[in-house]
Amino acid sequence: MIKSLINLAVLLNCLNACSQIIDIEDMNGTRINGAYYKDINNLLDPYVGTWVYSSPTDTLKIKLRKVINTPFINNSFEDLIVGEYQYIKNGVEKINTLANFNTDYPMQIAHKIDGNSILENYNIPMCNYCNPNEKRLQLSLTEPISLWSADLNLRLISVNGQPALEVFKWGTPPPARIEGDPTTGYANPIIEIDSNFIMIKQ
Image 1 (tube, helix red, strand yellow):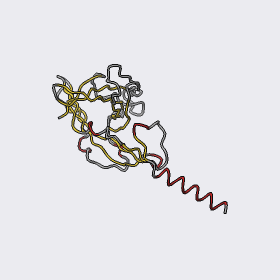
Image 2 (cartoon, helix red, strand yellow):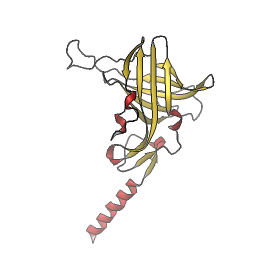
Image 3 (cartoon, helix red, strand yellow):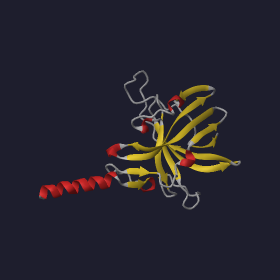
Image 4 (spheres, one colour):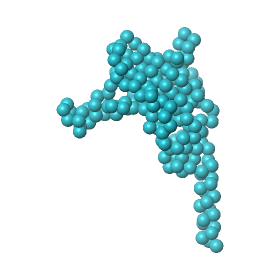
């Protein structure tokens, strides 16, 4: 009898966790087994699309899409922004992963851009000039060759009436590779853009 009660309690606990829906705004760094981290308020939707930064020397194009209820760790699921990008330096294409944009990976975080972290004004890096209760989105970008990665903090703005992103790119470069020894460290980052820049929606 006691064993049956224990088994029932375990089953009920599992059913509760497996059916639990948690707003992505309430994520705290831990993952509940079987839970679904859902974009309940559709905060990810405005970031979907193609965005371009252009200067006399650099062009960065990113394409972002939203995936729903995609598998993650601890048998959990989540709504997520994923994407790919193209980077051109002085007219020479250095990186182009756009061909993988529509690929559905078993784990969608395999895309070179991914994330769903909603930032408040007080989250690091803080935004002292943002409007009260304004939300930002933090994504991760990885270079396929150097394997260097950076966080992209995205703020929705408007430039001359066009939707735009104010981007703050930050991250710590990996240990440099010793010249002539590919077994040490990583290659230097390929993307050479200042930490702050504006991307216009296409």
